[in-house]
Length: 135
Ligand code: ZN
Ligand code: MN
Image (tube, rainbow, N blue to C red; front, top):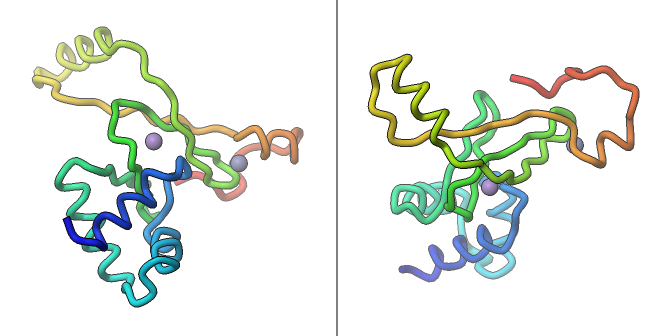
């Protein structure tokens, strides 16, 4: 594993904020000042392909990255975009229903919630949802 790869993986594993590539770039640059954004993107792809990181794709928004590759779900704040981890209960029912409905053999599944994070809830408790956050 190259020095760059290790530095990027360290940054990813040191945070639970599910950063985008640009945040990773700014952070890794404090250690490796001459690294390029292109190298960050290429390295992230290598790490994801190797199963050492996960890419979280949210439609037309920038991909976010997760250094925690254990089985877990995410909840995204509709207002500020923050992504938090959530545990996923045992999958028996989900998988069985999906297999019955589709005829597929299910190999994996993802759980994505959306909502308001604690900070956004307390900042604007009475505002209606959906001023800009969604897909
Ligand atoms: Zn929020
Ligand atoms: Mn996560």
